[in-house]
Image (tube, rainbow, N blue to C red; front, side, top):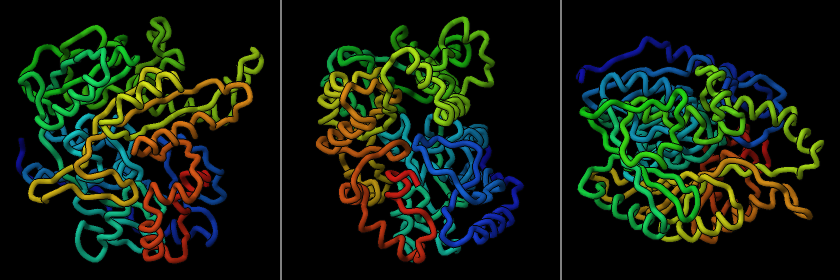
Length: 465
């Protein structure tokens, strides 16, 4: 591993100046949006009336410090580009969200998760400091302590309602050239949650180190945990970027090996399993489907086209099929409630497979305990499982669009959990404020965006502004 700091030739100051000028040009009273080519949001939003903020120069890696295991990264840098800069040094971010075009700033202000989250928490927990363009048009540097500690704590899950990150300094971790996988089947959900608790506590399973852990439930009687170990010595790696499909391998193989790069993007090729909705998993179609288009951002473009033109919905109506409700959610459920929630979900909603990603707020060395994050208040010391389900269900006769999502929201709250806000939400304002730190948000909003130029958190997440 090279020890020297590696700087990348980017005119960051010029990019920030461009951003600030574009912000100043937005007329008072008009909504502020980022002018970006990709999005991983599933919330439909009102059409903008004015140009978005110019973030075209804020998409790179500024420097990598292999000795200090840190990187300075611009807010619009994708994890795909960030990983390309860190892997040559044998390093990776502490948490790499599973889709290539998620940006670092987006993962911090909108949350993210992956298989290292059982020991490293969420992406914002590896941030040491960040520069933020606030609603007042100023750039402030927020750190865990000091003048802007309130913004540092409230920024995660603020969804751009408090400002936009222009630069972030994050911690990195070592990773081997390969990742060795063990796919362990469970026919009992309590046994699965017991295994999660054991691995979270010991970071090992059956005498082998576990560096990363996630899983898939196909049904309450068939679920898998994947225990991953970073290594420099492994057998020939598998390839799931061609005809083979990663999630199907869990049922066929008990052991597997991937390169570190392919492991980080193992879910992206087929957007977990959602590429099946476009025919991309059919053997004939897959051979014809260009490899450069087997990636999550291309599938998401297809979804946006469907939202705009409703082609599939019109075909369903012509066929006499019922309308469908989009159910696209990631929810965090306390570990001791996870088995009951999964059984309920299988019976009440019936979507499968679902993704399982254990989570525990990070406890940095020497910090004494994990920090709390008021706009997404998970409990320090509590084990959770992120449950991801992405698809649609028929709208039952007499039901309204959104009823299934509302039922899920109630069940998540009854289970002591939270749900991410990248997709549809139906909470009333009082419930939303109670669940997502409304009092803290308002205090920080009044300080850093006193004229409330940036769209509010509730308006973004629920009202789709």
